[in-house]
Length: 405
Image 1 (cartoon, helix red, strand yellow):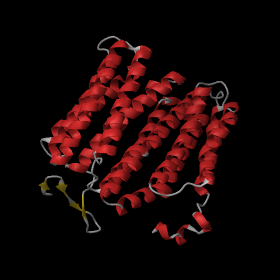
Image 2: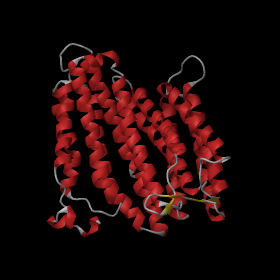
Image 3: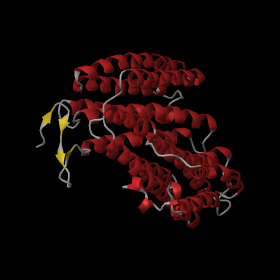
């Protein structure tokens, strides 16, 4: 069994290096978290509407930074051993309850109040994280956690009050709660106190990569399941296959081209520079990627709903919210890859920015097409992006780029 001494828990990788690895228990935790994200798609509706899409983004940001805290905790100590595992299981239950009540996040329904249950689940998540991180940290880190805890607890006040008031008051108070939370994390801890330490860059990069892969798979799976037995209709089946190709393209764009750059930057850095890359490239930079996945999955779900509804074989054209989710989500994902690249210390060329925003330029065309052709147009473009070779600065081929090794 691996030895547990403070935060130093190790396993031997096939390379022979002693580095911490993501445990099956943490993958289980991430699966529950991503299930919560798929419920955000259900919250935003079928068909989606602009208000629900904005509120869904707010829920995503709150939950992302709650999950991110547990990743930093796993980077600090092993979470699959007692007594930590018991409390992390309680946090998983908090995520699961939040997922179950997610569609009623702004609605009053029979039984317990949905917004209040969601707010209390979030408070539980944060409280367990703060307690465990304080327990696992060294004296210097504990002082940072205590200062951050002040901002975190202050954020719970508008969160709970907003849940009680409901409506637009809930929306703006939850925005305030997020700003207080993120202000405490980045404005106080990271800027003034030195940030959270990245103990193992390998673990850090692996965990973020895994959760993005799970999000890509589960989000689109949830979107496809909604058509039920109608998937046997040829147009619906065609739409599902086209959506699968779209998922594969999103995966390839990040993991073939950008993820290696980010991991290399994290591995080569040390000290405060490494901590900054961990906070910026991963905790912050991966949020647009997850948001892009969620919105694209929402648009994909709308496409399948229109095709399976009957009427025109290829489905009626998408309404504005569905088209914005599909095309805008893909653009957000591509822009997220550029943000990760930039924060990793690699420059961004104008051509790369143009490639990322082209889906927004195609949006008016997609609105005029039947749903199946609309997703087909976007997928065809993304296939072209994947097949287009990426030339480094100065016209060198990737194999000749000295920074590529």
